Figure (cartoon, rainbow, N blue to C red):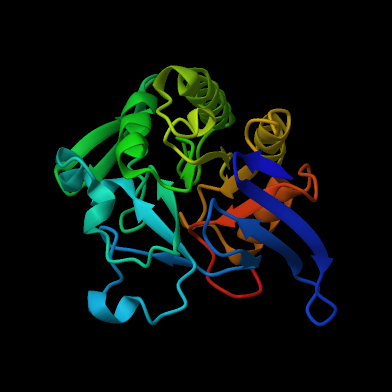
Length: 263
């Protein structure tokens, strides 16, 4: 599947040994990434406890950059120049925080997140502005992840907000595009967030909403897990999040997955 510009994802098929879903992801002019691939979490664009001069010798192909951890760097012209990553490493910009539990405080504009500059609201516009500076290969869309035990009404509102924010991000892209590659608007490829907590029906609806925009949003992040649900609830939520997706849809596991079997 052609993602955007020089971004492609091609499914190969199931592994004969494990049954894992195999594929190949190409991000611009960077070397192809065989999937499944390890998504390495960084701290402010650096690998924890690893000197920057050693990073180039590590086979890190795909790295997650939390917006909450690089908020200080957004004051400079080119934040990515401070990242201790190889030029061949593809990056994914994540609007939340991997180091703190979602606060569950949301509004029609965005989500409250603990950042290196204190607690701040992340909106679609702030995410787009950050991505335009960082220029990641992929950007995860803003999501409302309802806390465990949320009412059906609260979960429904989360789906509504997440869908609205995704649409707003897509609508804003042409206006904020910067050459070269106007079609990616400096944000790389936009991937949607499947939300719904442990409500299986809600997760399916969320996935279908993204799948319906697959020409513009060719991938998903399985979001809102690791919030206290049981392994059984998590497994069911993952299945519900992925069942509606086509084989050509890129799938990204960010948080909440504790075993290789779940991944």
